[in-house]
Image 1 (cartoon, chains in turn brown, yellow):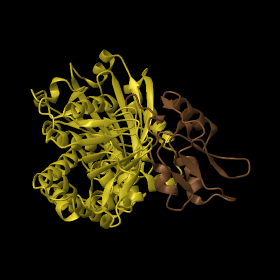
Image 2 (cartoon, chains in turn cyan, red):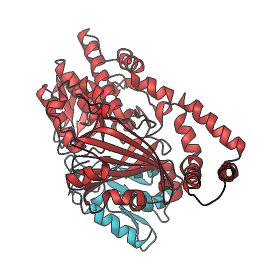
Image 3 (cartoon, chains in turn cyan, brown):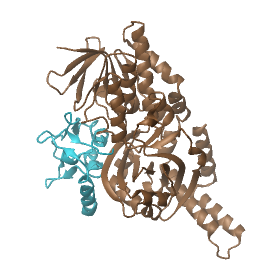
Image 4 (spheres, chains in turn brown, cyan):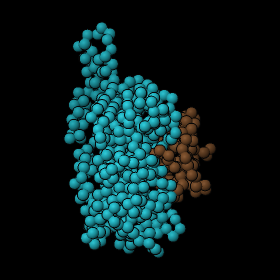
Length: 98
Length: 435
């Protein structure tokens, strides 16, 4: 994905309201040496661009901008690549319109 | 240790959960509804179109105070290629009736209103509470829930799972499987605000009239997908959705598709100068009849999107959600009235009522449609739209070519792209799946 598109999605997320549960990420990526095809696909599929590759070539997640759609769960939970939960009650994205 | 007991616990405050909680409370049952958002609607995402008939069965006079945006008088279907669209439009003044059939709504606002009705009917609604686990006895019967609140266990005779398309509880408890990536679509959506007069002029609307555009074609890059543009009072809900499996396979980004859809010459002029105020994403159940899981068991029922009850062909979800929630509640009420236990055997009544309703009848009618559209995505979402566009431009452009020659060119382009057997086969398959 181009850096340009990534910038645009960050601009989109900036419009949303969130109550971030600091230090309690509701989605966790299983530690890995080399990412599975499922994990790699999340770099593009996640509509909030929460997944990024670090300098060591591993896939990381930052859940702050997550819109709680569940797509990554559908793709990468069956393979055990991620652990997926809802945020604690009241936290996460707070849609104004929905 | 279970401290407090209810007749029923409803997990989730979307369309299905609110319909269930409202019906149960109206029937005099002691109901607890749990919602993880700060209010009903804060986690819910939909296009959104509301169907009056299904809501009237729950709140007959909803038109008096429900936050409705516009009643729909015009439907446009677009088949798009890169630079054009071929449209089928239906607009009728008869939709300007006293009790309109369809409205656009904004879910966060509508759900708040719906939730107020649930409270007024006597249900206890607890927001900002995530249910983390279903409590089951030694025999697997669901006896309550555990929430993320302190001393958060609550017991009930029956739990209504209205937890939405990505509901965790039922799947974690092994009551149903997590939806397959071939059976759910990911849709992304933006809210575009425009001055009311500008919006009405662009869509040829007066007063509370509304229009809806639904579009397929090259906008989904060969994936099974659809774009939509819905008019609200002073905003436009605009989005696009495609199958999750297709996104995974193609590596397309959802926001990339959305931007491209917005930049299409047929769309750009409609939203020019708008102010975007929100970006949302949501999953939509697309598997239809064949993807419906077990709907009831000892101490539980599942309703709405969590039960995959969505008619992808007619783009109807919220009315199936409302109806399934209402019928589940009616079944529970009947069992309760007879003083019978909430066993799997007794709760089968919910499935029986659902089978007799439009919900299952419609889903059954289109049971082969998802497979057809998913397997042949390239043809239906890429090849045909391009061919139709070529045919239209060939038909309309006057350049001295004899008409017979033009017709032959069009026919040849269809043959070259799909072959005669392919064309006939697609027509037969589509007709069969529609039947």
